Length: 381
Image (cartoon, rainbow, N blue to C red; front, side, top):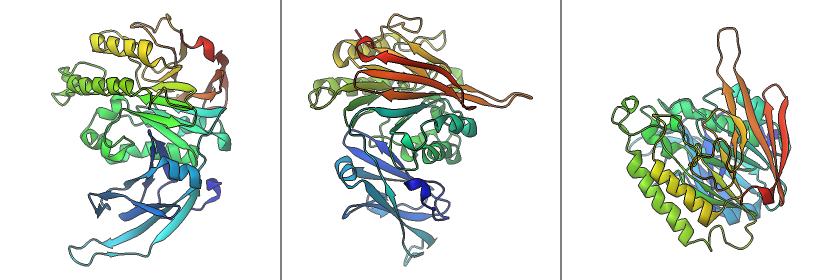
């Protein structure tokens, strides 16, 4: 078990392994400038920028083939602490290697935890998020883990939570939220968080589960004063629209592929949900996305955040405004501290099984607020 590994002092936390269509990205965080690479079996993969090993950022990521890591069941993080990165003859310390075990998802049941809207309330979110302990199989991050993106330090909450919950041993799915897009460091967000080659929307495959991560961007119009002319999300969403249609065209390699038994949609805000002005954006485009999900992809379950609610939303329910494709779960409810009142957090544990989904809303004090099992055949029309 990785939990028994004593980390070198240079490593801020355990690695975390993020899943995509046919590859993982292994993220590591350091307290120093370091050169980083990962070994899986006999092959080595580097954190580099077009052939130049990176050392200027405390956050490192290395892409490895999913098939290889699943087969090997372990990976070795290697690093050299930089002494001085001179123009000629840079110096670094000796190589340090740490090997971590990894458990791929191969079948049901899949014990999952969903975290969103943490807003840097790390301690209470973690107290809820360790619900499964060593038995967790999958962690889903659903946006707004930091409260804003003014600097790279705000992103450390992502890796601190993944480290404490998974210890680098099981896969993580990451989607971003609207608060992740605010601040001077937001333009570097994709460089330092799990994306599919820079894009925060992608598909993933984990054993019998196929999933699509969608990114709805900011939650108000581009010309809203709060953004100060710094966003162009309408054009961005049109590019994402083309991605959704490509996935549908390639359905036989995606959600209709052999072995797919469950289809998930993950996004911070569901496209079928409409809030009050000025949050009622992209009604035509999001309505079309809802139709494509409903008529073409036909997912079994949607996992979302943004509303700061813990709620199961059925088709035709009060949160269904543009035509849900399936049952949605709004998974997390943060409560910010007030004078005399400490912060509080409710999160979402799930058991995804072949014929059912068990939804458990639990709080940071160890209480279970809801425990309901939904039949798979009733999740969508």
